[in-house]
Amino acid sequence: MLRSRHGAILALLAVTQLIGVLDFSIVNVALPSIQGQFGLAPGELQWVISAYALTLGGGLLLGGRIADLYDRKPVFMSGLAIFSAASLAGGLAPTAWLVFAARALQGLGGAILMPAALALVTSEFAEGGERNRALGVFGTVASVGFTAGVILGGLLTSLAGWRWVFFVNVPIGLVALGAAWRLLETRRREGPRPPLDVAGAILATAAMLALVSGLSQVAPRPGALLRAAALVAAAGILGAGFAAVERSAPAPLVPLGVFRLRALTGANLVAALTIAVASALAFTLTLVVQRDMGFPPDITGLAFLPAGAGGFLGGSLAGRSVHRLGVVRVAVGALAVLTAGAALVLALGLHSIVWLAAGYGVVGVGIVGTMVATTIAATSGVERERQGLAAGLLSTSQQVGGALGAALASIAVAAGGPRSYGTALVAATALAGAAAVVAAASLRGTTATRQAAAGGRSQVA
Image (cartoon, rainbow, N blue to C red; front, side, top):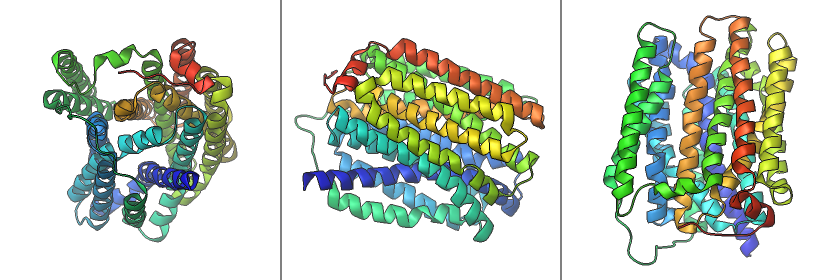
């Protein structure tokens, strides 16, 4: 009975992971239709993506801390309800600005939902083989969600209109809310609850907003790079203020001692680089297929289908292999596969949709395998009361990486044509190689790596 309940909980949490990843890719495919509906200029259209990225990236650390301080069941359900309601509002929006507002609200819901979901996985399943397999499923579903979003986005946009890329989240969210109410247990925190670090939350949110906003505005236009640099510099100043506050706060939002965990810090850096590669590839290859090769959105979705199959394979293998091979070997091996896939696309995929799809399939194996390994490394050895923090840090790193990858790719492809696409793919391949080096250096021999391999456990206060 307990095993079947755990299976049902994992299915529920995986579905919520599916919603978040599905939303990212499904909306990207619908961008040209949204632009045509409202007559948006390119600078306005980017707010469909940026409004979501800003509130999501800005709120993840706070969302993770809330998941630690309060019962995770109502926190998880609140995030899911906000995300679902915002999806409905986005589908019904009569103006572009209301679409932007709905996307911002979706990001807020995601900032609450994502760390709570990951914290529930890591607290419901015992550290070691059981958790590794669960995180393998979690990562695999993310890959399926990304690919399904591209395919479903193309089909919905072509057959029913762009509004359905928002409406599709609503029934899934309602079913998930009902399941959460029945399956998740209420677990109140024992003892006094530490106060919320309001000053730290404000500074962290402001710093992340400035950073993601700055990266989102990187473009080879007059004044754009200057604005982006100013925002990134402001993020650095706010980040320094945040660190100063955290050193003296009685109950800090992010205890700075957590960064002494070599595996957690390394895993976050590797995750950021990996998602930067994924974001740059998704951005570039969507343009290659639609703008350069001239295929419609539905064919674009089918071209990305091998990436989902590859991700399914990569997540399954990583989740089952970590306890035998260790985190570092799985992470470095997956990153080597990712680098090879990106190189294959660069060498043969720019002029052939068949080779592009094949290379992207190899990329999918590497991306999801790496994300499973880094999630295990980032959450191993962290006590249950800080799993929300670990999840929030990891999700934040992924958001920063996604914004960085899109920014680099947008600069590279601004001139248009195969040569600029090749430049973007060279940058993505180099980032994948750099991530492999970081993984080998930061994860090797760490406590988290040894415990993930042995199925042991230690706690970090």
